[in-house]
Image (cartoon, rainbow, N blue to C red):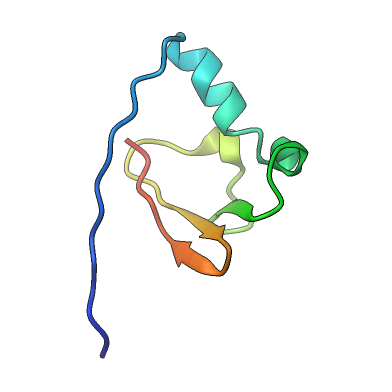
Length: 71
């Protein structure tokens, strides 16, 4: 098996959490500002607004795929 890498980062946004969450989870509009990002839930039955702390999503950027955890 290949090596496993871990990257951690934090971003502070000057907006209320509900506002940030609603913009972040509006994945259908991501194409308006980027052509290289895609984000989906790990299972098709789970919708973005149903995600809870501890869930993971699948994110792809220019062919790189990672699975960040919702905190």
